[in-house]
Length: 148
Image (cartoon, rainbow, N blue to C red; front, side, top):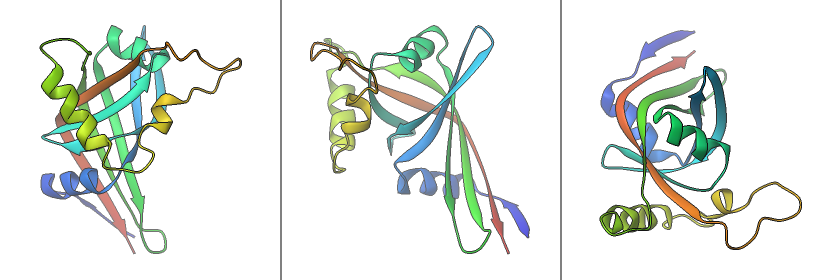
């Protein structure tokens, strides 16, 4: 197996080609990892969620990490890691342009809202729960590829 480092352009292309990654955040020294549906543009990962643990933790510590991967032929794979900063896009004056941009990017994909709008709890969450649009500024990106 041959492993090589991906260029910054290759990393960016992989981020743009995919919609699902793994978001890591941390609070009080405890890491937390969850799946994340996103759209990539303008050196940001745009996403949408209901309030919950990940939003609470990113508000407390905006430094996050996102990992995106794909599997190739045989045992081949490519993986990109983003070190970034959480930025909330509230529904307030001063954030409308960024929030509308996030909406436009995310809504290009079928059922883009489902992962962020459905919470696995019983009883069901009230319709009054606010939705949170956010983006992650890509501060550093690195990647690897393995091929046979």
